Image (tube, rainbow, N blue to C red):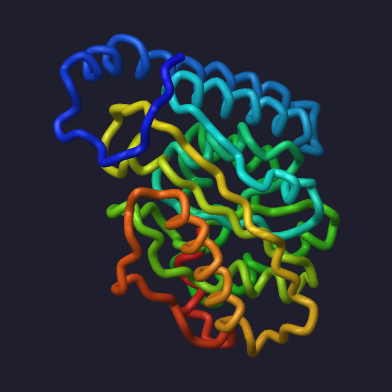
Length: 277
């Protein structure tokens, strides 16, 4: 396989890539998703723990990443040791989820927008595999649903969350919401910061056409939360954002932009948690 180079995504894509997407990548993507998803739902009839479903999701992630043509590299993989923690990454693409499922070598649960749980098929899988919904429309319900994620952490399962609350349209890390910091402080667990680089060029928002590129997951040293109080949630959120942004720009061709900011405000102001995904 030739070595891919990360750079700006062509617009429009070369005609040969569009043909390959239409005739090969897109059909295989939907076939793999339907097949693995159906198998996962079937297994959920007797797998109440979600472990078998998670292993199926890991295989789905690897299959879909292969279909996309991406070449994935993990940096500092020693930090992906499965310790109970809040794992966070920037959100660039629909490809982020399969890439992460394919890479992370341990059981974890996703903290996801509550409205995804209402979707046919996707919602069924999220519910039956034990993922954690966060209410993004009701601030008080948001605090309560983050409490469910804290319970998951205290039960001994790591959780994963995208702190931006949605995909970046520019490829740059956007403002972070403070839900992950709140959960980590409440549960007394560390935060493992991770930067995804390349998935925006692979499959940006508002498109279904893959453009094969190298994808990197750069993992940062875990951030211990011992000594942090709930009143320091914003301080910890700033630290997470700074760490992930630094990792991202160290390995991306993009340069930092000054306009990217943080979502600030104490956790006792529940509207600041509304959009956590």
